[in-house]
Image (cartoon, rainbow, N blue to C red):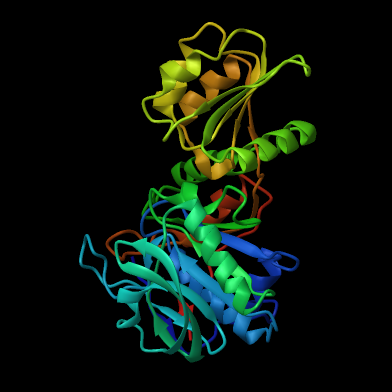
Length: 369
């Protein structure tokens, strides 16, 4: 992947810099939080975050950015391939939630405001304020509850902050669940340089990320249950409103298909599963005769790790997907470079991606500082 920085701002045919266009297309006004999710590794997510940071700075937005990452981002080289990676450049006044071991790899001057008590593989997460602009490394928590705590601590410093969660490969499911209101999807030619293939893969991802909201009354009931019993993983709601819900408290959904199937009786209206919904779980449930003609709800679309074929099988059985916390995908950012750094056909990729959705699609080019 080619990712670099330059001081020359690209101006498009409308006279807008790429950063001005970024804010215009992403429609971030009114949001208090946002998740950045990559379709695959090296999809250009870090470059997308850099564009957001620079656009926010250039616009003179009075609300400060408050950043954290699921996993690690902004490091100088990929821990797997050893290839150079784009770094994160932040401006004075930005707030960060990042692990203590990352502080030594930041050349921005930081004021450590608080220690969170949240432990990660990179050490305890610290709440910091950027005093002078420079490069930083973000290494945040992976658990949703810890991300919520990071947001709470960051908002203690400035309640108006725009909370941005930078996702991580295979952990995109932790960026939703009511944590964030909007989402930006980064896609790259590293997934496929074939325009039709990339468009097809992206269209499926969007169909999962954009699943509709669970019916309002049911959603409120489920959310209240989860507040009172946070360990619940499975909630089965019957068609009759006066009948009690069936519930399971489990450490995770993995390996629990038989226990979940035990709640199916042919009288269900909604089956709420809290956690990652995979092909394996769906395959086991589809083998049950009563798993049909009901709503299968998840926390949000980032919890769905199912293939196009599995999605078709669910629909054929009358299974409708719904989200407790529906996501709003605001923007799709394209990285037109392949894994070896060679360029794909940018024009063809943009055309194909724009044909699958009304969501804005753009390649904003290299990171500008």
